[in-house]
Image (tube, rainbow, N blue to C red; front, side):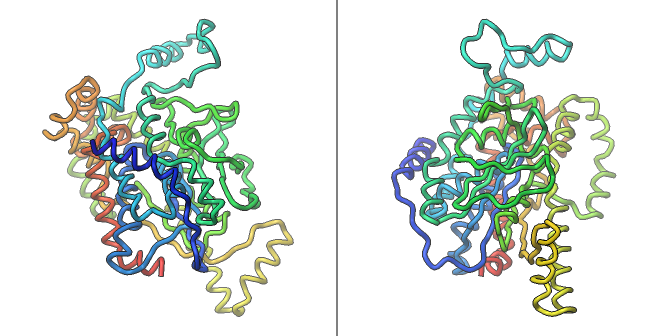
Length: 434
């Protein structure tokens, strides 16, 4: 009943007219959401704290002007954009949608696509089956995504994205995907203003769009697992292959402050060495498993580059501050005037903050998949396969599993962790939005 209530409540939001935000703060804040498939429930927990509980505990009301997402972060970015004027209450519905997932209903493997994959792997032809009527179906993934597509369609009041943009409640929304034919990163931008000058990198381009569910699904289409998504006559897959945490679009669209939610846990150097020493032998034993290797491959494909991007941003901030201290407060204006004559984009100081998991999400997935709670909840074929997958990896981690564990029990643990990690940064978050 709770799942129906959440879905109906989200659908009913489509009939609620957006609220024009008055007295907009001077600073333009960007929200940046990265990718990680089922790991994304962590983002929902962080958003729940920031959108709802932060104001209750500190009296500081957060706001976002630019929202950027990749992969599962694209779905959340669309949700935030569609509910930006009612996000404090609507964030509860996002958490409920994650908690309703049942892996035996959501995660199904496609026998036809498994057969196609095996056939193509040994050199078989992969062209369109002439007996299939109509255009070619989405192909390339071994997971049947119909249930996940219904989840996405029912998780966002899609018509409110454009309504909020028109009401000036939001400046821009971006969703990043990878163009299959060229390998280029394409940033779909739904904005109130014309596109600014984009990256000088020819393999990173922006495209005007009325963003809808198919853009989010394309951004989240992890190769081999999920099928590529056709958009405008071309196929797209997960945007995280080249840009897992889309920091640069937020900056190009004018954000003066950026809040990043990452799905990557970082051990302290000493803890990481100790951990590897203790469990290294077990990981070596798991190494021959194709599931173990698939998980490591996914981690490599979906590597979060946000730490590198943030380090570049901090270095730019340091240069601007040092220049102002040395040459005067107009240093940035003079510098940007010179850069403009050479065709470079302007530089400015941008405040940044990141919330990231305090625990390894692969380890959390491993523990949950081996728990009695999951064994009781997942009794179907998929549940048994998932438990077998968990047993094939080292006991302290389940990287592949953590991407596909679309289960309400696991989602709740991630939501709780995200909420707790955000609350632990309460004072910093309040200062960020003050």
